[in-house]
Image (tube, rainbow, N blue to C red; front, side):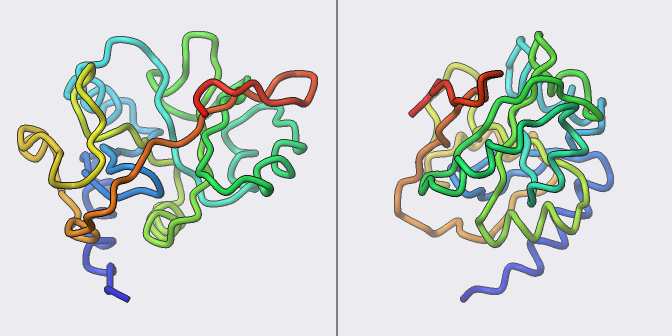
Length: 189
């Protein structure tokens, strides 16, 4: 297995300095930053060209969700255990993140990552990391690193080298909203 430690260190350095990273996730390549840093999130939103609120954040463990969701329904974790595809869950009552991360209704979109690189990155950073697809708003989501618009490389503080050569196509996560009645509403299969 390829050693991703140097990339991990560079990503962490950029994140700690309020910078933006372009990095491989458990789904597609992502643009990321410290989800608690208002200035970094605003910079990412501006580069992405996204005008509305609501960004996906990555966390490493179920326990972390308790820090960023006011009243999570723990039944969601049983549901997620049965799934094979990375799934982003929209929870009511997001808290302790930069304002643009939250949707206009105050909800927060969180994905618990299983990918080794992402888990190490989030665990070592000890805060949620924004993960939005590595494309400008309105443009197609790249399925491989080679499909990423080269203009994005100039907009970030660090581009991870790990997994750049992978040729398998990747896809975005499924997205569900966890409803008050304890059932999922599937927004993106």
